[in-house]
Image 1: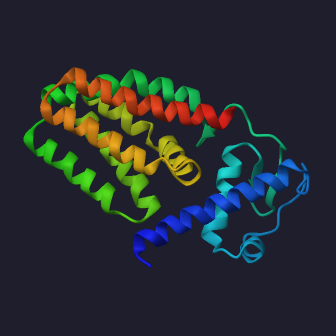
Image 2: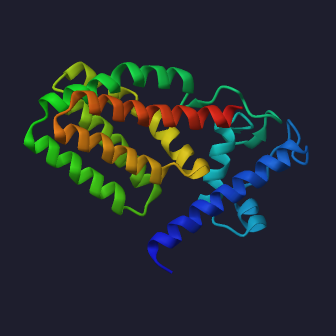
Image 3: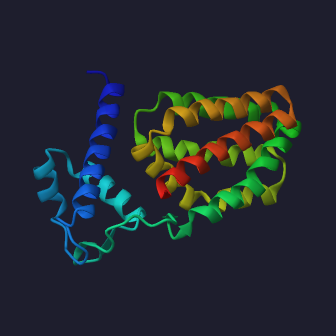
Length: 225
């Protein structure tokens, strides 16, 4: 088995545990107010590692199904997913709206103003995103790429605003990759953005960034339905 296959299997295992936990909560086997078994017990029950269980529980928390209370464990707080997802305490809708206002014009400016060294950095990040087999490293590189695009815009305020959103967006990226298989699509969308910046077309760069953000928004909307 290759490393890449191992990564796919891990993501598949996380999704399987995530869906099973959702099912148990939906059916009331784990009722509102119940404390879930600990990570070790769940890992043994599902035949997976503790990191897989931890990621699945995090996904349940993002959906508003569970809540982890320090020193007490993880409790079921709702039997239905929240219609408004939150990432690191930030409403998903707010994130989407802010990104449209900031990252789309930043991509356009980057196409007009990027320096050769900045363009080389963008392509180096694309290569690393395509090569990494670590899910968390991919999320980190994703954030670095978006921040680098804003930096290439030549506008310090745009760069600062993109950087300030990364904590919430890192959580969002990890959640979508593990539960909605967004990574491969994101890689293709990122390349389209960087290629447009390379071509020096502000319009194409704005359109490519718009497409990327709209696809993310559509995925989130499907989850909330």
